[in-house]
Length: 403
Ligand code: 2NL
Image (cartoon, rainbow, N blue to C red):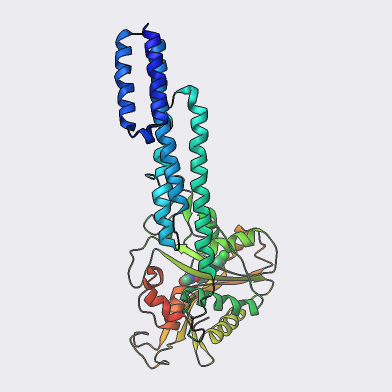
């Protein structure tokens, strides 16, 4: 009796729902179903409960179909003429809180038996909306491509912001090209070095102050590794290869544990040079460096060599050039001496050659090293070393016309 009664109700409800729009009581339908659901639930009959739940679902499905149809009509009559309209459309229909997402969310209320049909229906709507979006999108895009014939083609174009080569790079390139003309080739090595290539092979004894923790960045995982303190380590590697004669320059970044100031930094750039052959003399060293200085700073520059000390060269010297600012008269740049120091040099120490497997009785060589920052500061009258690594465009822009 209850089954027959409820079946009749289901049929009525479904029919009512199908014509709900014309009847005009869509909400009433759902209310009726919920009411009967409760009645049946009390009677505790599983079958009837299922039938009625299904009936309730059918009502909602019908609501959903109506909603989809309405939205489809709305989409078809949408007017999308520019990028703003397109974005509004996307947010309304395809956004994370959009209509498509909301309608798709209804899937969770659909009973398992109907999931396939409902899924197809909802997916169709999703594809329909996406296709409409694509259509609008390409329409807006092609509109943007169209030539505006009212445009004044004689107007100047948008200026292109040209970058500038970094002053360190400019000077680095110039130094390399000068030495390449003398037959030197460029050799490189790793920035993380081992103790042998950075210190021991260079005749720097175990207790030398340069090895101190205060001057060198050691790699904490392995105290045998460190950040190279000069590019001599790359020259050691080149010598170890054993191909002689050797004529190389090694440019690159080096690291020292210094307090950063206008005159010192914890990283800077260096160019070292090395020439090893039979009968290489101090005269060759002087002539090579003299040529370099003239090419770099001009014909009128004077040079002088002062005796010095480096553990890896013997004899050793420091080279000064006449002050570029005052021409030797004396000013604040040269501290009233008329001279500025630019590099250190010397004849390669025989122990260094032996350490690299080179016969120091047969071969001799010279080596030199200079800081690129120092040369750049002298060339462009830069007063503070920190400007090179701060990337302030007001500083960098000043080098736009330099090559
Ligand atoms: C300086 C001094 C110098 C060297 C670097 C060198 C390299 C090898 C062997 C021997 Cl593999 N010497 N390099 C020699 C003398 C001076 O640099 O004040 N640099 C900024």
